[in-house]
Length: 423
Ligand code: BGC
Image (cartoon, rainbow, N blue to C red; front, side):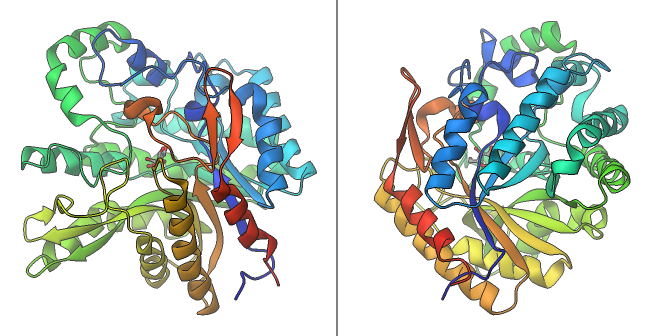
């Protein structure tokens, strides 16, 4: 069995995690604080800003036909209302580099890092952020829209909603952050709380800056949904040909006896509450990393005997197929798996993960599920947020002293599925 003609198989990245020197962003400042929850600062990251052509070449040579990357708002608009034509030209060059190699560029307009000024103005809890985001999106759409086909407005729009849940989970005794899908260090945040607040006040004018990776209130979730709708309206207006949506981080929720109601509630937190904002979208990006068992009180910590990834959550490739089927039954548009992968030092484990995911997704597609593509997280080992550079999600390893790229067997393996598309 093979994926049908037109199916996309690629790899994903995000600007702040790979580009380097994202100095106008909130994350850059938070990483540099004396008291910080970040294991280390991103600094030059893996210098993808200057090495993108070689990175895209590696991906294309392996046979992959899609590259998902994000445009960095803090580079495009380093000060409110002041746009950088140079940054815009950079992303135009990235898109063109993909096209020349027959690779579909899949663009995310916002992947967690914000301009620092946005956070000083109230960040992701402030209603004014909706207009600021729409203004940024208009600038990008007017400059690049003619070249874009797949556009995702906000990466993991539900991240802050999930984090609010994780904090509850930590308070209930799961303080190691099991089940957490992004490199967060909740303990680090707690331990340093008072000292961090003072530094935050200096940098952002508030002891609790509403950056994207902080717990969201219901009001904040509304801001995000409104920002998405406003961005969609701009994209419809400027580049009506684009296929537009957002992405959500989703657990494959599996209730244990008595956990059905809590699982339904968790699904509402992760997916249902966003439905009104995405129901008319062309596409939904699903990001799947693991499953979570749910008991009567909510998500359960990862079982002590589970096979876990570097991130501490369960190695469970079957989550991807389960989620694609579940979403297909609740959402009307196209579906793309915009992220899926595993942090591991053992590439053989990554290869098995890919094989198990691909087998399930091929079945989904042959059963008629409107899945249009798959992007593996990640093309390259990169900056895993608060966990720093210790996580290995890449199809390609990077020696950060020389910035040398070292492709792993998993890159060829994923490429072999792409080469068989339409066969
Ligand atoms: C995020 C990525 C992150 C990945 C692996 C996703 O939640 O979109 O930025 O690196 O998970 O943890």
